Length: 231
Image (cartoon, rainbow, N blue to C red; front, side, top):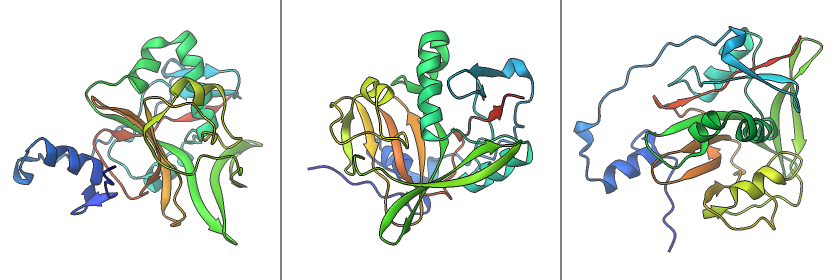
């Protein structure tokens, strides 16, 4: 039997609340975390240039404890954007070969919990599921949408799919194919509720690709990795 954890429990992130419950931590002992007001990085030393996507990508997450829409707004004001799922895959592949410490920081199964938003907002149009995302065009950030390929894996895998298999091959929109090999990367497929976005997280129990996060979710470990175009 697979336990289905709701997106939220009593108004907080469901996965964090579930971990607190199973570890026997009373609700009143959970600390109140104040928002971290950290700026978006601007120094070129804070970024890695990824040739395959022609983007500078931040080495660290910023805008912690901000929800999906707040991150989008803050990034766009600085002429930056979130990584789409395909761009995030390319960043992981590049850091795996060139900046292993950063790759491990994102993907290793260890504490503390590290999580980040990805630029994928899933919407239904005429019964078809689309992903909305942003790209740079002529020095502007432009919103795009694509219908998800039919070969997408549309079932949860807990566990899991192969992390290496996903990084090597996926549908055009960066999500796993139906025939992907099994593995330890937990995967939650995109929901058709018009209220689901994507993110990636790892902690002491698992690494996970989520496509069913609420955009209103917030946590002190949840941030965003800014991407800037090469000028």
